[in-house]
Amino acid sequence: IKNFLTQRTIVRTIASTPCSYSKMAPKTVFITGANRGIGLGIVRELLKNSEIETIIAGARSVENAVELQSLAKSDAARLHTIQFDASNDESIANSVKQVDQLVGARGLNLLINNAGVNLPYKTDDVPNRETILKCIDVNAVGALLTSQHFLPLLQRAASLSGDDQLSASRAAIINIGSDCSSQTLNITGFCNNTLVAYKMSKVAMLSFARSLVADFETLKVPVLVTTIHPGWVLTDMGGPDADITVEESASKIVNSIDRLNSTHHGGLFDRQLGVMPF
Ligand code: NDP
Image (cartoon, rainbow, N blue to C red; front, side, top):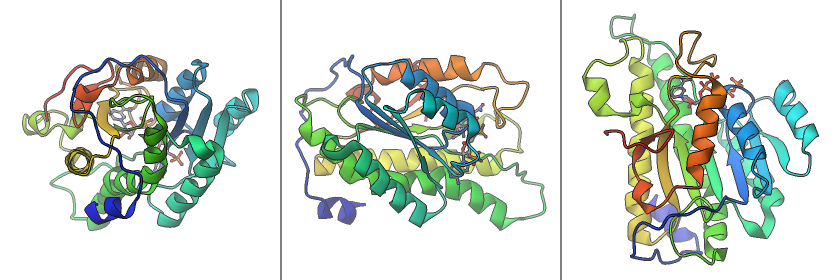
């Protein structure tokens, strides 16, 4: 990552004063896995904020993303859909080009790594490397590579900001993590053992976020990075017994976006920015 970062030119100094409270919205947002579930819910909530100028929604199959397409038709000036597959390097690279064209000189203020899979896997299953790696590939490696690829666009936005504090209105990466990102909770045996691969992937996702933060601080890259647990949500992944609706989760997450500041850099939080243990 260090080599990757040093090859990029636009690097500005992060102010040493911590903790400003930001209330401005990002102007440009790219979210992955936006065709259903929490991702689609977040797109709906983002559209309610008229300060956001451009929302780009990534979907593995744009043609089949019926609800997303219909939303995009209803606000064609602000909502754009592009093909995005977190497990495919070419797709990630193409998505950067498309987002670049859509945001132009403004750069990208906010990347939301939401795309994810939960492939059930137990410690007493027949050993299956492919299943574990698939989960880690999409949830952790995909989010990491996406963040790396989008960094120049995020830095462009950060360099244009009149503000010298960390915020999502300047430049930020939000990873949609999980309570399974928390080693502390995992070690208590929380959830059942069917989530072994998923837990590994979400811990890895948080680990990469913390590595990014450490490198960003060293290299003075003013991009905020944080990980948010959306709650147990009624989606295809969350299942029918989950606690809360997509709207409840997505509205709280979007409400939290404008409040992100340096105190959230590198941390793990619930959807209302309550601190969660690593
Ligand atoms: P869903 O299963 O409802 O939706 C998952 C989304 O991710 C879909 O849009 C799906 O696209 C997309 N996706 C899957 N694989 C890829 C890939 N390789 N590339 C790009 N997109 C992909 O899940 P949720 O909405 O519930 O979950 C969203 C995020 O929230 C995930 O990161 C998940 O881990 C996290 N989360 C969810 C919880 C819950 O209770 N629901 C709890 C904690 C965390 P497609 O339609 O093409 O498959």
